[in-house]
Amino acid sequence: MYLIRVGSMKTNGITHLRAAQFSLLFFTGLFGAMASVVKTYDFNQDGKPDYAVSNGSTGQTTIWYLHNNVDVGSACGPTLPAGWSLVDVADFNQNGKPDYALFNVSTRQTAIWYLNNNFLVSGAYGPTLPAGWQLIATGDFNGDGHPDYVLYNASTRQTAIWYLNNNIYVGGAYGPSLADIGSSYSNSKVPYSINRPAILTAIGGAYSTPIGYGDFNGDGIPDIVFAPNTPTGLPIIIALGQPGGSYVDGTTQVISGQVPAPIVGRKIIVGDFNGDGRPDIFIDDTGYDQPPWPGNHNWLLLSDGAGHLVYQSAFAATDPVGYHHGATAGDIDHTGHIDIFVTGGFSGSSSYFLLNDGHGHFTVDTTRVPSTILRNFIYTCELIDVDYDGNLDLVVGGHEYNGMPTEIFWGNGTGFYSDTNKTVLPADAQFGIVLDIDSEDINHDGLRDLVITRTAQVPFYTGFYFQVVMQTSRHVFADQSLPRLIHDRSTWIGNTGRWVDWIHLVDITGDSARDIVVDDASRHLGWTNDGNGYFTFTGGW
Image 1 (cartoon, rainbow, N blue to C red):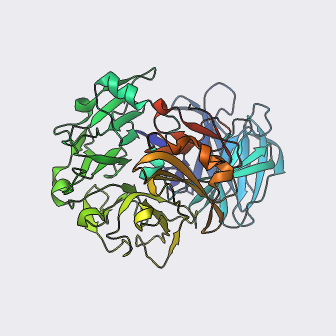
Image 2 (image 1 turned 90 degrees about the vertical axis):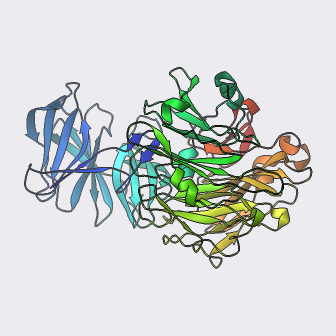
């Protein structure tokens, strides 16, 4: 049995990373011992990619020369020393020829073997990895023309990039935690800002606070799902992205059968709930947002395998009715299934988890919710691996001025969250309503920080404020909003005007630093990160 290692598969806007960030395919019949096709590369410089195959028993490497999918010849490459494995192929010394990236799992030493076609010319040691880390791939991540290392820590499910110049280490940065892969938070982080009013006006839709992203028709172009905000309910809208950047209404093209019409959809989360590799949609619904706040059920659409989304009416019949103001999704218990957390607390409803069987069938579970928040007024939430330990943490917030603190309940991989294992985050007296929570390492110190989107309680829902909460050491946080972003509260741009619903912490400028992007380009609001976690207003992107 043999192992082909190939790059990450990206399907319909959701990146699927399995087994140390790379999909694993198996085949039989080459040598009779474990072999690894690490990567395709043009070894003989004929303009066509070839295979590099290694024999895990003997250390022998072989190059298979290909013409499209046809084997046109082969040649032995160099034999690896005992204890060493071939991880990837890249041009490390920039001479236009392929080189081997090698790793010794016992010593954690790396090495580069410089090749001319299939012949070893020379070699050099690369950097030695820290304990617990493995070299799993290479690629030019910072665009400087030099291959870099991709590292993985299996115990924490954390990835990292080591930037190289040939075989010399020149810097490093953490990549995503694999705990975040497939989560609704991860799927929402698109590296751009769309003009919501302009798109909805062009396709004839009403304004929408909820917004979700995914390639819903499978054409490789990102699409958007909206849930218009009305007291009586309007059908959701699927805006299909077009070449050139425009959008068309593709709702009935994508959705087969009934189109959901939430009363007041608050948040749209996108994830692969039924495990078929295509994006599904979950919409939480507060119901009519006036006394007596009757609440409503939530809405689930699953892909049918034929390019359509189908509303799951059976789910609506079992999902609790309540004032659902927030939701988030992720694999909370390492089953490989994307579960959902739904907020409650208002008008007598409870918060709960929806445990996924892997096929998009959910079971309501309140036993995993900490008792202090089971019926507290939670209005926003995210599942994020804040401490980089490989487990999703539950971050919740709401009306701080009414006694709902903003908290992180630390995950342990079981899917149960407890009041005995939590951290209360700094509050803000003026902007005491938490609307959105984002978490990234904004100053490249290896610790994940938070930017919390807030609005004021007096006057109610007026203005916006981005609270920058730095993780100064593991599970220790400090409010550093003033020096890093706000500077002077009396002149802060968000003191008046409309509140902000969603932001993204993504690299817009291409410098590997997370910028603040307001998820509505019509607001003309954006802040660039200098790389050290200090932000400057740009006026939009």
